[in-house]
Length: 202
Image 1 (cartoon, rainbow, N blue to C red):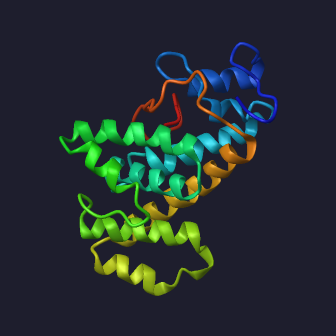
Image 2 (image 1 turned 90 degrees about the vertical axis):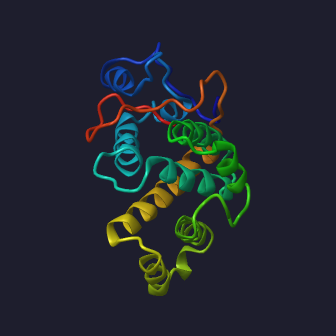
């Protein structure tokens, strides 16, 4: 499952056992990306909080499927098949619920510069995420200005930034410690809401 020791749900006791109960999916699964934190439960709490805030918080204004699409693109660019696979599954489920062609969006994300069916505005947001992933030191105020001209307000720009930044962290956690999808059900969906209770990855 990973390059370092993990603490399985069956082995967990005390604080970690309580956290695992909060983050498990409806069928009881604790994803491998969460179990990798078992030796330091406080880092799992931090991971959980930022993930829920940037992707699944009721205070966000961009559509959840689009935030997931950013995560899929960033994960692919970072070579993190674990996160790409998980979040592509979740994105496709959300797209189907919105009566959108999930396969067309997934195919577009196979390119470094995704085109249709993403709108011009959505493509620009993805281009910002790509640049932030590949060349973070070269982001300029003009990049933000272009997003504003495309119709994103500053809060929405912050959402795109935070999802991109979160996946930089998550991808390196996963690839740096050898986390894989063995024995996992992909694309589990966290419950909606503004707190971090009952959180699940993907």
